[in-house]
Image (cartoon, rainbow, N blue to C red; front, side, top):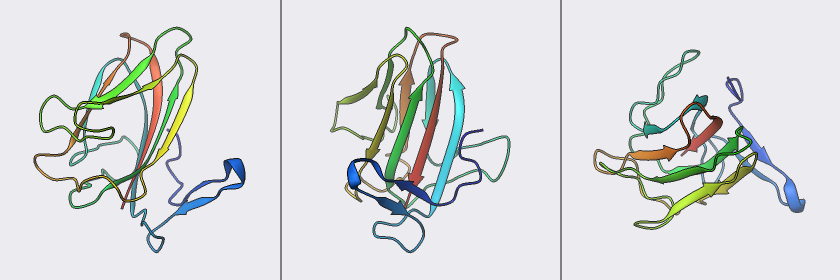
Length: 138
């Protein structure tokens, strides 16, 4: 599973470094990562994984998102969940990761807190196509 043991996330591209941990501003106090395939709806209040503790991000904000699209031909789209959606790109906007591409977003404490009515993301990709995702909350 990608990044399962990493509790501190550091990005240093473009001579810019951002390290998120429990004492940083913004904080990075919970992280979750998985390798998935096909369409998925992620519930930030109940992120389970086969290794390590499950994550409930209630009361936290999504701070960073990393997507690796492992498909050679399918586009991966991430959008506010149809039910109790969590907006990462405005009310109706979506984010796209091209075939074979990777994208990383740093939200700098700008998104809403995860709660009962703001908690789901819909990920859409052709059935059977694989991708990796990492989420950091604080």
